[in-house]
Each structure stands twice: as structure tokens, then as C-alpha cells.
Amino acid sequence: MYCAGFQRRKASLPDGSTWGDRAVLGASVRAFTLIELLVVVAIIGVLAGIGLPALKGFGSSNALSAAASQLKDDLALARQTAMNQRSDVYVLFVGPEALTTSWPTLVTQADKNIARRLLNSQYTSYALYSKRQLGDQPGAPRERYLTPWRNLPEGVFISTNEFDNLSLRTPNLWQQATLTNRPFGFTPANIRFPTETGPRVSMAFVGFDYEGRLIKPSGVTANRGDEFIHLVKGTVLPAKNAQGLYDIAPAEVIETPKNNTTNNPVIQIDSTTGRGRVVRL
Image 1 (cartoon, one colour):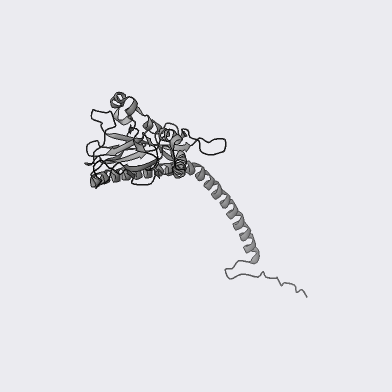
Image 2 (image 1 turned 120 degrees about the horizontal axis):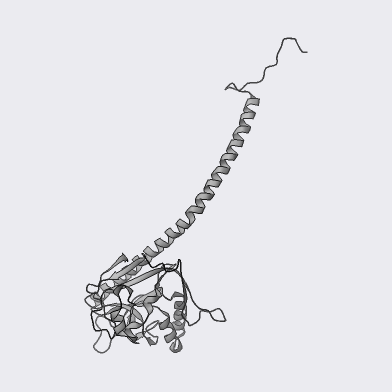
């Protein structure tokens, strides 16, 4: 029964608002949140587009720094080992020449397996090697590898210019080259590769004598000067044969970006003390 003068009151909530008010408010809040979410998503997209290239560059810079630190430490280990053993110690670097020269005369399957794996590590692999040990009898040296083959971090390789065999073929040109652009010295063809049972080949090297000083390449008579090892950002792509196996051929290298050696870490080794440090040229 409806009584005149009686008005029906809306149910109210503790804060004084009504259910209808709250419904309207909820709708507006939901609409605002959706708009806000879309704006945030758009901002994230913009930041991602700006930030990802920078993060990639940061990652490659970290790889370069890690590679420089790793190689410098292993060169220091070679120097210290040479002084401790009172004998020459070499850091041997894998370039295409050692692989193509040794492959036809590899005897054991184990050596062939190692050499084939190293085809994928051209310009990035190195190992410590000594032609004699402390306590060897005169005329009976025991040559051996002091470490397994090690690789630089992924995305970094040693400049291919370092593997130009000038020191053996034209030692005068090697001596005349600018120190910072001079390639590795090469040993005579007297290094067993890739293990102590392999054939003897010529290899790119940095060597230390029993006093920790840099060794001169064979045929070089003048002061050899400091060693500079240039690192590059990029990828090494080994050649493959028709069966999809690594082929006995020089690998292709892709610098990313091109010609990126400028301002990259360079390992400088003092010729007199044999001590190394990381510099930027």
C-alpha cells in the first residue's frame, strides 16, 4: 500500500554513497584503469625499442672485456710457467694454416677429431705448449701441451690480420711493420699439432723465455718490440663440405659491425718484461 507523502529512500553504504553511486564510480574507475594500462603498454614498447639495441651492445662489450681478461690471464700463466720451469713456453693460436697443413698427415683418429673440432674455432682457440720440461735430460726434451685448447667467449675472435705469416716468409717486412699492426710471429714447422702425437707444423704464437721475456720469431734479428693482440666482435663461420661436416678450409669471419676493432680492447705485452695489460688504441 502506497502512502502519500512517503518517499522511498535509497539504501546507503557506510561511507554515505549509494549502490548506484558506487556502480557509476566503479565503471569510471575501470575505464580509467584500461586507458592507463594501454598508455603503460605503449610506453613499455617505446622503451623496449630504444633499450634492446643498447642491451645488445652492452652484452658484446662485456664479451670483449671477458675475452681480453681471459687471454691476458692465460698469457700471464704462460710467462709464469716459463720462469718456473726455466724453459720456453708458447701460447699457440689456431689459424687456418695449421689446420690445412696438418690434416693430410694426421695419423690417429683422436688427433683428427680434435683438428676437426678446431675447424670451428679458428681465430678463437689457443693452448699453452712447451718443447721441454724441467728435469729433461740433455738431448731428450719432452714436448707437451700444458693446457687443453681453450676458446675465447662466444662472439669474439682474434683479428684475422694477426695470422698473416710474415715473420717466416718475409721477416724483414715483419720487422718493418708498425708495432700496433704487426701480426703474430710464426714458429718454424716444428710444433706438433693438435696434440703431442700430431705432425709438425708452423703456428702463430706468443712465447716467453725462462726470464719471462717475449721470444723473437725465427729469422728476426732486431729487437722484436711489444706484442699487440687485437680482438674483434663478430662470428666465425667454418666451411662445410657436401656431407655437412666442417671442411678443411679457412673459416669465414663476419665482423659485427664491420671494422669494429677501433677502440676495442687490445692486449699489449711488453717485450722486455713479458707483462701484459689491456689497452685501447
